[in-house]
Length: 436
Image (cartoon, rainbow, N blue to C red; front, side):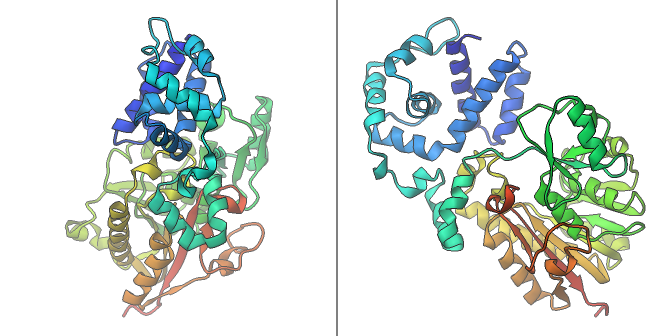
């Protein structure tokens, strides 16, 4: 692809992402699946350009508004070249336009506005725009994280690491690291999880034998830590209440040495469609997917499991704010109203899931969120309404479940500031041994 064609493709893709309800990563995958002619270098350039625009949307929006350029993917692309790449306007006209697949030529108004962009006083940019967050979310984070808020928001302009969870049912971390090294893929062991490896450079390993043969799965270190905090044991019955694609179920199955039973529930059959094939690849047969409705119609279906399960894991639907380095578009799609809807849904799910917990069993509540409303406050509300549950401090479980280092907190509360993982929350709640 010529430079003008690549730039046109990036602008087109940005437009698709802006108009779609699905996350950007799905749009990127679909875009290139339909354009097999694009080479790997072209795909990389377009993807990186698009994600930079998404990560720095707050800045781009401010420039566009200040220069009266109007919103849109074309404006975002042009400003990204001028402001971030610092390319002169004359070079843009020569290098990024023209050809049968290029964009329409710059208008006189665009040329004048873009020429003025480098001289704008960035000190006038509102803090939330400079941080590349919607104003209401920036205010929320300032209230919650105080002096750490600005540093936290700054981490979201960086890429998240690519992290693997080594499947202990088929190999160990040392052997996995050797297999990757044989293909010149350099990794570093995770510092807290004993199961993880972090890629030291950007590499596409989606078809690597480690993943193809079920020796490892893509999973952030925070999620690995959370799975271990469930403290599952071989032979247990476990419920993964919001199983999704089954990543957490697979982690739990490995910790159980593939002995026992994991009931993987979700309301979306499509999300769970690959659990069986992923399980076979991972050498486990203890995961049983089941589509539920998450309403009173499930009572008959779940009745045999009521008050019978020693571990119920709820990885609840949430804002996904802990993963916004990977999905930067999603912070712009979240509204305060949607956050309220999610917190109500989380309370309902917690209540329904708690009915499955056996006396003396545990309810593990997790989110990939950094918002207190979805985390601490949810647990606080649940405990007020369910006095038969009490907190099992994470600090008490830490060493017992094989995690490195120390933790002195009641809950697992991670942000990208801590050690570079996704933002994540986990609370472990134990039910009284008397079924009252």
